[in-house]
Image (cartoon, rainbow, N blue to C red; front, side, top):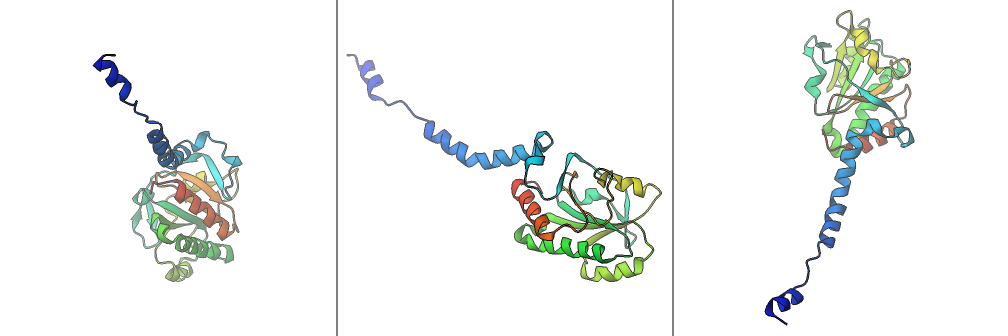
Length: 207
């Protein structure tokens, strides 16, 4: 047998199977999160365990100039890169409205280390009791409160409606890319909303 034949016989073939298995196992969670997030329009989300209603396909609110309760100018795009939880209601904020303010605040707090990824907002449908609403805000100082401005304000909020249902006193979620992607009805349970938010933040590494 020649020297070349001996070298060929004695040198073991490299086996990359174990390496590829490790790469697959470590990379799978990230690939799954990426696929779920960017392909959710094509998935049968009705089979998921979401408490809230997934908006499929997602919608975007027009990035128009809005007015905050302190009369300063505001655009939703200024919060781009963060998750936004918000509600819609009258300035004459009754029990359901006040409950939503409280829920949104407590849910964000309960997210613990992830709370910095979430911003809070409230869209007022009128300004008839703006002074009393301002009093409420003393307990919600980091809430972005948008007031009606311009004749097209109602049309601006119309994409929030699901199956023609009223949007007042609902809770809604906009993702870090600016997509309106989940809604919760009036009197939604805070614990269940929290579970949905925890799931979203865990699945998505965006924002």
